[in-house]
Length: 86
Image (cartoon, rainbow, N blue to C red; front, side, top):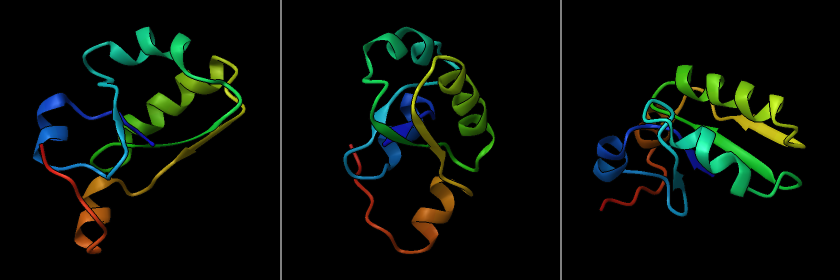
């Protein structure tokens, strides 16, 4: 589970077990090389726009399985799914 929101958004609440790789802060591009390209990654942001961009980056980097969690964390939280806060 990759959360591509900002660290501030992540700290306010995130899906348990998610890894924060801020798309806007450039962390995603730096961390891509450290991820196992054979694993499946569920990618999300607040509403789906940034995660769609992140999925394109991961797809271009030859990741085998990348899924955009639409419509994002806001919908996850509104549906009463588990949320962790830092």
